[in-house]
Image 1 (tube, rainbow, N blue to C red):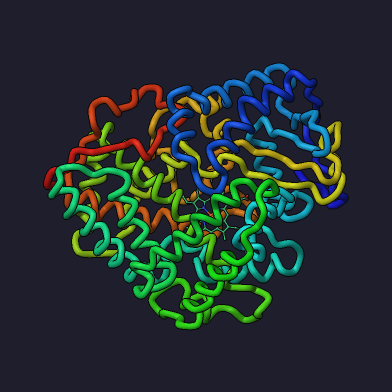
Image 2: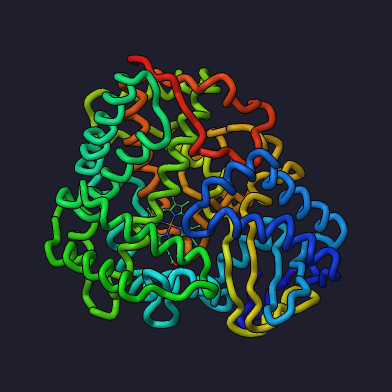
Length: 450
Ligand code: HEM
């Protein structure tokens, strides 16, 4: 618990890792996560992570360190950078609840990475700027609402784009990642920027190049000319202000130029990429759990012609896939001052790593850690009581934490209502012990009419 004097009561001591344990965390947890690509995945590395079971190894490493050092924060011995790893769900929840002071989301590393394309995005903002930019994002995405007021429009966009994907898949007899993802991003550009952006591949291609540079954060020079062209293009969309898209909503909701709406929109475009990955993995989970798929199909039938029906099982399936394979595995915070923590202290300027896979796959806490279980998800997009934080938690929680599952539900419904999808036999993971990595780019389905 946090006290008014800024100290945190905890039974958990802060401990210090020696050189061997620090190296083990770097080798097994941090370097593989960076190698996969924090802002855009490097496909060959994701494939290698699956083959070599790197994510399972990362979780096992942190569990072993917790056995040895106890559940409190573990400080690593890294020169020039104070760094701690959080080893239990309770500490993760407390830290995330205490944003942005004293645990700030805008860490140095994040600002360096996001500075390649959205230096004034809320995630890298501090102080008053953070407050007003957060408010703009919450207004546009209607953060607290389970169903967005523009849901009907977005459901229609998902229907149209996924109908096209299904038509081609049925024609070929196969649904693969590239086909799915092309349709997914047509839908995303329409939802975010408007119908005029449906085929504006150039805007997402520019962002892809900037994200690749951003993967290297400080280590790669900023391409300022490309960043200017990209942000100018977003400004054009905001000026056009399509009232049926989020950009139009943002232009109308912006009350202060310091909210920098064109710096908020890149996140809307790039963060739908993991939404696509999780949706495709959800199709794989439904394919190997026919009893859950049958129930989901019943809900789709019961929804009938209501385009914006809630579809709770599809939403829960999507959330459980984000639990099993979190698309933001490293949630980072930085202490803005010295923080007294139980019997120890986290010094000012410490970067704190909450490694979501540890908490989501912690078989010491969660009996169903390695199984697909949509039943874990009730109403909200997080389960801090169990350490399940696919969208983070607290004041810095993803403002789209209800919006994304809603859109994913529309897209999954549109695909499932048209097709039966059978995962290729050599790609069917074991239900009883799902792997730590599931490469979405390699998944392929045999498609037949529903
Ligand atoms: C599967 C899809 C997504 C996941 C798993 C996800 C997850 C997250 C997480 C974990 C954070 C917190 C990061 C941190 O504290 O370091 C975050 C922040 C954020 N997300 Fe998402 N997100 C997704 C999609 C989206 C989409 C589609 C949008 C916009 C349309 C969005 C907008 C934001 C914004 C603006 C922030 C910064 C919030 C702040 O700093 O106050 N996200 N997201």
